[in-house]
Image (cartoon, rainbow, N blue to C red):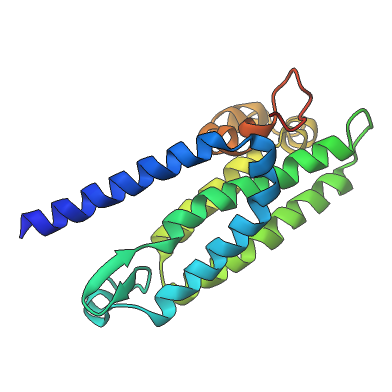
Length: 196
C-alpha cells in the first residue's frame, strides 16, 4: 500500500524538479509575456475537476478539487493555478507602476487597479465555489489581500494617515507572494522594469 503512494509522490517531485529547471532557462521577460497564457491555462485546468472526479473522494472530502480518472487521483489544478494567479496580479501591479512612474497618483487610480485585480480574481473564486473548496479559496484570498496590501500607495499613502497601524499591516502582509510575483520583474534599482 505504501509503495504506490511513495512512487506517485516521487514521480511528482521529479516532474516538479524538471519544471523548475525549465523555468530557470526562460528569461523573466519571456515569463512576463506568457503570464496571461499561464493564467488562462490555469483556469482551463480548474474546470477539469468538475468533469473528471472520483465520486468516492468527493463523498469523503465534500469537494471536487482533484482531477481523477477512474479510481486514480491525478492532480489538484488549483495548486498549479496559484503561480499564474500571483504572476498575473503582480504583472498588473508592475504595469500600473510603470504607467504612473513619475506622476502623482490619485486614490481613484489605485481603486481602478484594485478593480482590475478583482476582475482577475473572480473567475478563480467562481471555479473554487463550483468545486466547493473553501480551504483553497481562503489561500487565494490571502494571496490577493497580500498583493493589495503590498501595493503600498494604497495602504500607506491613504490609510496610514487615518489608521496608525497602516504601515504595520503592510509589513505583515504576504511578502512571499509579492516577492514571487513582482519580485521577479521589479527591483528597486530598475524602477520596476522587466529584468532579463
